[in-house]
Each structure stands twice: as structure tokens, then as C-alpha cells.
Length: 623
Image 1 (spheres, rainbow, N blue to C red):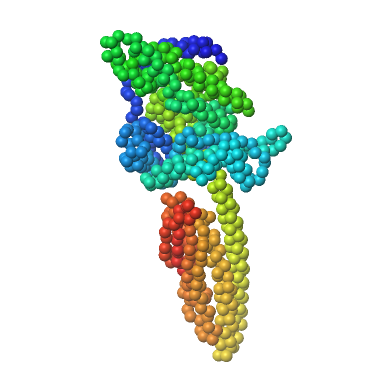
Image 2 (image 1 turned 90 degrees about the horizontal axis):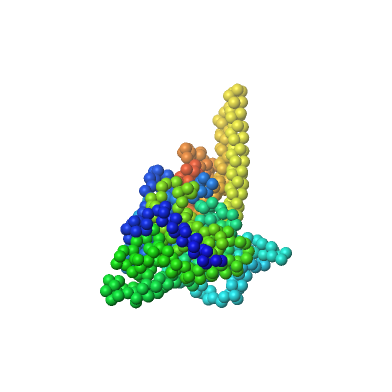
């Protein structure tokens, strides 16, 4: 790489930008942070309120960033609903007493009237170690244990304090042997619990917690950005450290932290500013403000057209854009060399493009320099491009830096448990859920078979009953045709026979009544509701064969009176939808021709296996 040639090219870019756009001094003079920018969307009535929305939350040092999306039925396409950037001050920053109330009020207001809300929060990736390993093709239920010992052997950790999660990426062949390509990452449980408890305290339970590399992965995996050919990288230049992530086919395949960042460039500027101050006259020194890291940072950030321009009272005001760039390029060059070594280490595929974001506002020559030094195309990661299919409304801000800063929150708003690594729902939890689903499917299938058999037997009994009724009708017609001479004894004998026929029909109905009740109850009970106890009192009074049968009411069963059924069960799901699920279940039972007078004896939320469930007891009458 030729540093001199690259620098000259960058200076040409700067000169061309000056010709095409107004100077930085004429740019927006409003100091950052900018006021909150919010898209005003008109929600079309109750239909949209019932949508399942996902909210991404990024709690930074100076800003709270929120993004809201929904998943449409149109080929699983995601749609941006709203976004907001909220400045934080010394009273509302994380850790202050006012922060909890501030967080609750802002998120609640941002979510609006939506009922089905999934909230995903970002956790710092500083203490999260991500590795990609290849292991022999063992059974899937043995993969986690195999990875656990492989990781612990390579980098020992305390499993009581550290969470380990894995994701099976694909099956590969290495030297003729089949293997699993697995991503494994470890994270401190204490930090996870702190974030989880933070949202629990404000009454906003989290659906998931993840990190920025996985948020960017969501943007690729969901197709929010058009699929790029080959392998791409994402570089974030932070204050004290930077992170380079490599993605292949939208999946994170390598990540590395580098101990270099914005502060290295700030220190270079600080050194130059101090040298200029030492050479100045005493009168000039008196007019010059105290020069420190904050002042040097202000000089660096002034390179971006989205930042506040320097004034005559600021140190570095007389430095030109080219001079500032020349000062910081050596520090940036050292960072780029670390990235180049990372690309050399990752020999699986050639990186074709690199996206660059920084802790400072967007400065295109800096991004161009990174690509020029690496010999690949470079660009900013801008998922708020107005041409993207998920952005139907107008973006309400022209500040490119602000939109790019919302990228992590947008990535979190594109999260789903199926494709997003979740620190609250690990591989082990997914296995348990799969096993529970299989058990539920098996139980449901068994109940369905029993219900089908019960219905078949019941229909068979009804068929026999219809045949008996046809026989009675036929005999009555014959009786009216022949009109034989009968006496009192004959009438009594006919009455006894008729009563026996009626008893036989009622006996069939009574015999299969319990099966019909079980079959109806099974058909009306959805999979997320489990029945744990049934108590039935059919209350049947068989007719006395020696007495005249009582007059039957219109809705009484053949046995004589209505039975009683008591059902105990539990409802699983999101806590916010437990009550509505119970109400829907009651409505299904009321629509059944078998059950009447349905009432709830008891319902309460209980904690079972770290999940909130609604336990209920229902009393109903059986026809």
C-alpha cells in the first residue's frame, strides 16, 4: 500500500467536495445533540394496533435511540414504522435516579397503542467473546457439550458467571470428513441480568438481548439491505477500541476487537495543538482556551459536515481540513494495518467490500482512505436509504450521521428468536422448546385420535337410534293401516315395548356421552392451553322401567338432568396476552352445543419454570 499516493487522492477528494458543496463553516451551526427526529405515521385504525411490532433499544452515553418495525405478510418483508433519537443529559443518563422513569416514559410513548410488543435491547460487545469453530459431526443433542469443553480448553471460563451460547451455522466437509461449523460466544451473566432487571423494574420485559455485530447480521439476514455478493466486512471505529466484523452470505463468520480508535487520532491532534500553543506569543496564549482532550476531540469532529464548526475562540480554528487530515492519518493508518492483518488471517474468502462507521460523525474522506489502503471498496452502512423497500414513508432528517447512528437500534428491531442470537433465549432453551413442542404435538395427536374415535362411536350410536326411530315410524304406519281390535292388555304391552325402545336409545346416548364430551373439549382446546385436571359429574338418572317416564325438557340429555364439568388448566404465552387467551377459550366453549352456563371459578398468574402462566378453573354444565 502506498501511503503517499492514497493521501494525495484523499486531498483531491476534499478539494472536489469543496467545489461541489458549501464550506463547513456555512453548514448547520446548531450544536449536537440534535433534537429528537420522529416520523409521524398515521395508523389505520384498530387493525394496525393489533400488529406484532418489534422495538430496538440502544442506550448510549449521550443518546437513547429507538426504532420500531413490523413484519408484513408480504413475503415476510419488514417495514419501518418509526424511529427516534432522544438526547440524554446529566440527569437522565443511565445510573441516575431519574433514568428509570425517563426510560419507561420514552419507550411507552414510543410504542403507542400497540398491544403485541417485542422489545430487544443492545448489550455492550466489549466483554462478549465470539468464536467460530469446526467440530466433528456429532449428534445435535451432543453439540453443545462438545463445544463447551472445546471452548473451555482453549479459553477457560467460570460457567457460573459466564453464559455460553451456540448457533449451528452449517455442515461442512473438511479433508473429506463431515463437520459442523459452529458459532459460540460467551458473555458475563451479571451484565445480562443488569439489563434484564433494568427493563423489568420499569414494567417493560425484554424479549431479547444481543450485541451490535448480531444487529448488523440481522440487517443482512432479513434482506433489509440487498444481498451482496461475496464476503463483506463492517468496521466500527470507537473511542478507545475498534471492532472488525466479517460477514459471509449475511452471517457473521469472524469478529475481532482492536485496541485503537478515535482517541488515538485525538491524541495526535492534541500534540500538534500543544506545540502550536508553546510557540505562540503570551498575548495569543491568553486568547487561546485551555487545550485538552475535549478540545482536540472537537477539532477532529469538526471534519464532519454534520458537526458544529469551530469558532475563532476554539483551538485549531486556523487549521485547514487538509492539515487536520494529515495529522490524524498516521493513527488511522496503524488501525488499517491491524485490519489488513485480520483479513490475511481470515483466508476463507476475499473480502470484497468494507462498511465503515465511527464514534464521530460521518466524514467521507476518512472512509475513502480506509478502502484505498485496503485495496477494496469502502462505504458507510446506511440502512435508512430512502430507496430501500422497508422504508415506505419519508425519512424526516437529512443528517446522514444521525441515520447511521440508528443502525444498531434498527438491527435490534429486525430481531426474531429464529435468526437472532439471544442472550435471554439460548441454544439450550431452544432445544427445550423443541422438545416441549414435540410433546405437545404428540399429546394433541393422541387426543385427536381419541376425539375421532369418540365422535365415530357417538355417530354410530346416533345411527342406531335413527334406525330405531325409523322402525317405530314404520310400525306406526302399519298400525294406522290395519287398525286391529285391541284391548287394554294389548295397549299396556305396547307401552312397555315402546318404553324399552326409548330406554335402549337413551342408554346408547348415555354410554358414549363421556367420549363426546372429551372429544369436544379436546377439539376446542388450543395448543398453548394445557388441561391438568377434569372432574365430571354427568348427573344421569336412568329412567325407572316400572314407572311412566317424566316429560323431557328441550335441552335435557336422555339421562334425565344436566351434568357438571370442572376443568383445571394453565395458559402459556406472553404475559400481556394470557387474559385475552382465556377469554377466547371461554368464547369457544360457549359456542359449543354441548357446554352451557360456563363460569370462571378461579384464574391467577403463577410462575412455572421461570415463565409466567395463567392458571384457571372453569365450571360448566353438560347437556
